[in-house]
Image (tube, rainbow, N blue to C red):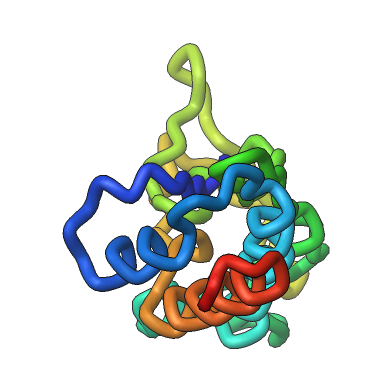
Length: 167
């Protein structure tokens, strides 16, 4: 699962307008996209530390975190550790290659295949439980908020100044 920031700049928002003005005339944006990628990886990983969505809302605490302590979505840290970015000229994709990343980010319902049951171990050594389905609440970790936009604009200004794009 990946978030994508693509610099098409078709939007009419302040963020798009500011970026468009700074990037006018710059042909090779891949070095900037690499910087964006590093920042977006860091910002996303920080959400695992704070257990908050890009909009600042708190994630619903997992049953495991309630029962055993620790943080939601970080039992093994595999999802958190899988966050990576792929820059290109004019875009950067970032996210996770874990098959369950979309379900953790967007939420949804998992149903047993073929009419069977889902069986899982309960926290705290309380045995096992079999159910028809499990609903996973959305715990968004991918996205760009106002703070991210401000930092991306700063990175763009610095890049444009370095290559002589600002007068």
